[in-house]
Length: 76
Image (cartoon, rainbow, N blue to C red; front, side, top):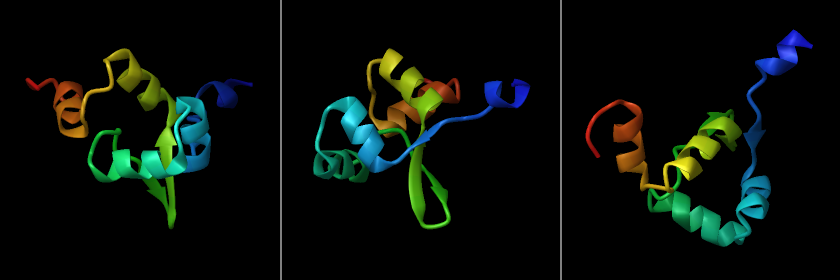
């Protein structure tokens, strides 16, 4: 049970687009233009960490460069 607490859930593009209620094509465009948090790669698979996405949504969905600056403690 303790190990499950620390498990970081990751989402595929399909899963994320469903949660955001947008098309996969729109999600790909948002990612390509830097308007989503940076995904992680697991081999050739692209995934987004659910916890990072929640934080990003809570912050008002800033562009990737601004989001990364905010996370590093810099000024956006």
